[in-house]
Image 1: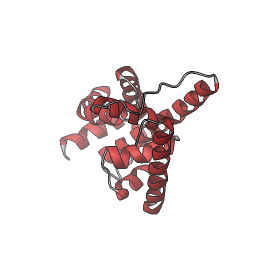
Image 2: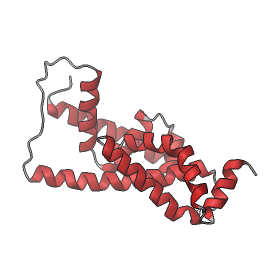
Image 3: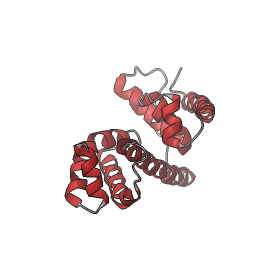
Length: 180
């Protein structure tokens, strides 16, 4: 039995010390995943903490049919999806309340930071599953098959969702008048 498998088994049995070692091992990966969904450091930190809390609650159910890392990614992704849904609902409510939308003149020169901020704002306007598929496929570089495994969708469904999400993202960017 390799050391990680032993840690997982101990954590499944309720060993908090073993679980904290797993957190130490996987925190960078989970934080990176959460950073694709959170808007700032505090939100990413909260989301990462919520993911590990969910993992702690769920680890007794881990059946070791797949590698722990795959199961962990799936739990994290589901938590991120839930976060996206709640944020999407909150943002829709804010728009209905009449909060001003920030805009820039289309002729402004954009540096990399401006482009990233523009993309982040546009991604937050997408439906949760659209943002999820684009984040996994385009930003994190997962293959179609990997996205299908993580989400539980078929490869064909991932292709269709990805295509539609890119099309919707382009529409959002064009509507802002900030994208060529």
